[in-house]
Image (cartoon, rainbow, N blue to C red; front, side, top):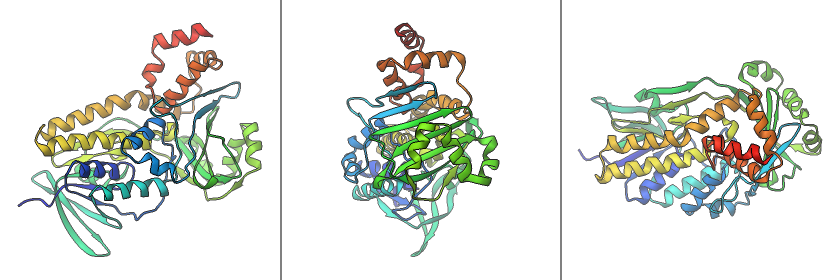
Length: 399
């Protein structure tokens, strides 16, 4: 029997909608099912680093985001207490970052997928991933319109860490690390940021500050995961105590007004094999890292591009499915591995090793080095490149 769809994408946020959009643009028949309705919020650091913004630009979507009055971010500043490293995170092609509310960004991406020809079904609960002789062949689910069975050549799980697709196919996990950091964030008015994304790094504590939509500023604080249960007993008190570790910023915050409840999260770190017979995983469903470096949205966009390109080759018959998806996995892992390790190291909130502290101290008055540090934390360049002996020696020699 001919399957109705080339791909069914489960999930429609920063990984699912772009995957569907790109497949539909390539001429494939795509169904997107998602439990949420849009606009709606989700736990997120919101950070869209410059290379992620450049990807939106390539897809013709960055102007749509800019039109929502999302403030651009041109400087990343890292306050270590005794000194601050402040630099430009982008490149000529992608000079600025953004911190969009997910209510706005995700709706923009869903609309782009629909406009590209994908069929979108919001408010759809997937009840079962259908398997036949070990091969995924479709889904069974329901919405307000009733119960449905839909079939496709491939079912793509873009439904996050708790992916129903991943749960059904039980993919292999590797390079796993437990939750390392716990954080809470909220939004403040009256806290202008002048295009800056600020980080405050203290012993076993950290804060992140970024401007977002509607004149609001997101302020996130983090603690080691081992202290999560204790800190939850007084979220506001512990949040404000962490802010006070950076007195200059704490004084700025005292003139601001909190506009929302606290939202909190702690996440595991893992890679999952992102494909198998009749299925694929994209975004957090296939790979997750701590939020301390804010890589999630950018990674989701890049994963979507890689996965859609691989599926397109398989659907068009230019490459066997297994070979195309092996290439997707290999490329994904190579791109993010160094950042994954760096992120997990940062997420412990342990003081940097002495050699790294010496490097940071040497670089904080060298604008070229500070720009490189900002770009490394933005994922514009790899940590492997920043910490390469040749680069380290150049920074130390210039000190």
